[in-house]
Image (cartoon, rainbow, N blue to C red; front, side, top):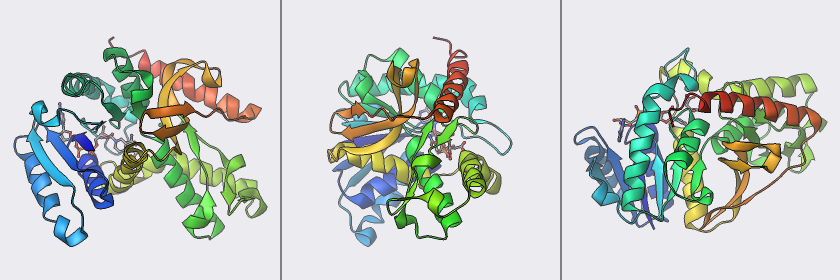
Length: 308
Ligand SMILES: NC(=O)c1ccc[n+]([C@@H]2O[C@H](COP(=O)([O-])OP(=O)(O)OC[C@H]3O[C@@H](n4cnc5c(N)ncnc54)[C@H](O)[C@@H]3O)[C@@H](O)[C@H]2O)c1
Ligand SMILES: O=C(O)C[C@H](O)C(=O)O
């Protein structure tokens, strides 16, 4: 199993590290445009191999895509992150050009690959990859919902004063400060609806804290987060590589599912060796449907800014 990660910055390196530590890939290629940067990160990470007990070979490359040839999975993290006070959507001007060039280079060298898009604004960058490569829709996956759901579970556990392992929940919708749809109605503590334990008011607070999870960290760190994003990507990569058939909310091209068309947005999918093996259609209530439709409107508005 060969995995390429483009962008050896904060998220790319974290992602490579988690993939290596989980020890399911034979090779991870880290590629960056900055001279020597990916080679340096790869060497540093390889020097953790004997300490952390993994056999994955991590190779660095300065913009040489021949090293990525034959990758089963490619992750795109290249591009600029936001600064405090910015929205993810403001990154479109610079990141669209980067994602378009990078995805074209990746597909040239690995025509059968599965692409996982991380660069922001992620739903729109995932749509861009659909529009500019000829990969089938099952092989283009946007990562946002897995991270947002992990943040949702963190906030739920905090509110419930429960261990995170006791808590389950999912966030669908767009990966934006206003577009996320945390499914509080379906969240559980060890199979019991969380509404049995906390008030609707507290749950609404959990929902709001979840939606601004990325902005909260950006304010604290001065740039956006990387540990949980890297871990979330590694979860998707592992589900595909190990044919786990796990359900993750991912940004995928919708063609009528959830009553939506011609956009990529977060919905639950089953991930296996073929990429997106099935889109799971949840029976949303009216409020959730309305929230999802508003979220889709926001994503489509950003998509309209793309020069296709
Ligand atoms: N989808 C998500 O959930 C999620 C989570 C976190 C971050 N992000 C996004 O991921 C992106 C990366 O964030 P980061 O914190 O790692 O940023 P970073 O600045 O630390 O790293 C980005 C790297 O991309 C490289 N790069 C730029 N142009 C390139 C090109 N054409 N080819 C190859 N490499 C190139 C840069 O040299 C840099 O090393 C941002 O757009 C950020 O918003 C998304
Ligand atoms: O918040 C950001 O800009 C980065 C990422 O999308 C995140 O949610 O951490």
